Length: 152
Image (cartoon, rainbow, N blue to C red; front, side, top):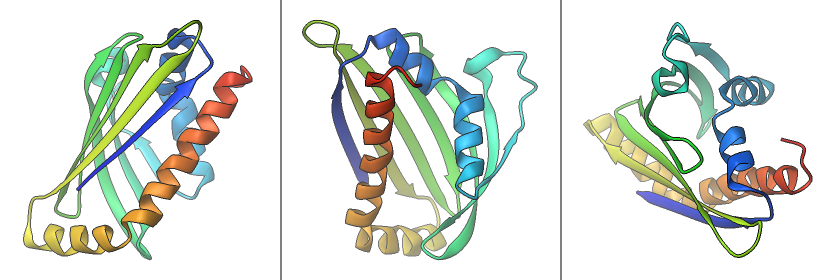
């Protein structure tokens, strides 16, 4: 399953990238939404070596997830890979300039089943696709508003 969201943001690309790679703030926001977040790397490798263990509620069940940064290109792109409940997930954020001071952000989430259990879960997620897409879009729209107001 693939979900893609593109937004134009009236803010410089560097500011948007800084928000996407501010893992401490993102961790705190996830905790505020009820997720358990544990940073498992020692922080010595910087953002490129970041890795986490998370627990969160999805489809009315508590899920565990292990994630790590697989690609980081300052001011251009960030990719995170994760595994949870027989699912392999990849999240790619790509930033590009548009006219003036605006930045186009394209966020692609790809979810693949790695096990039979994962196939069952993926099927449930496909049934809830519009709700999941709407939730992602709402989070992105919140980021857009904060970026445009300079409140990242």
